[in-house]
Image (tube, rainbow, N blue to C red; front, top):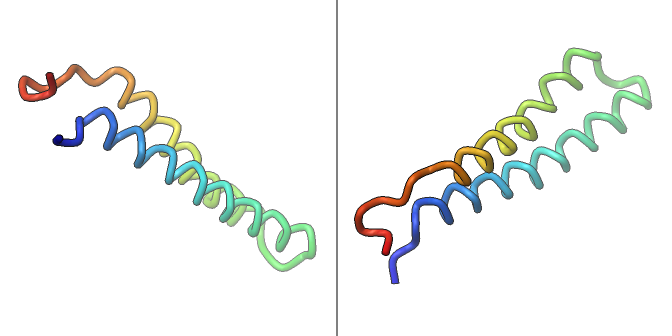
Amino acid sequence: MATRRNDTFGTAGVVLLVVGGAVWATVLIAALAGGTSPLTILVAIAPILIGGFVLLAADRLPPRSDDR
C-alpha cells in the first residue's frame, strides 16, 4: 500500500517537532549555563515552528487522485 501524502507530511512534522524540541532544550540548558547567546535560542526555535507549520499543511492538503 502506498504512503499517502498527508501521512508523509504528518510524519515529517512530528519528526521536526521532536528533534527541534530536543535541540531547543539543549540550547536552553547551554544558555542558562552562560554558554550561548540569546540569538542562538531564537534560531533553535525554528525547527519547532517549521514542524508545526508542516503539520498544519498536512492537515489541509487535499488528497491526490491516487490516494483512495
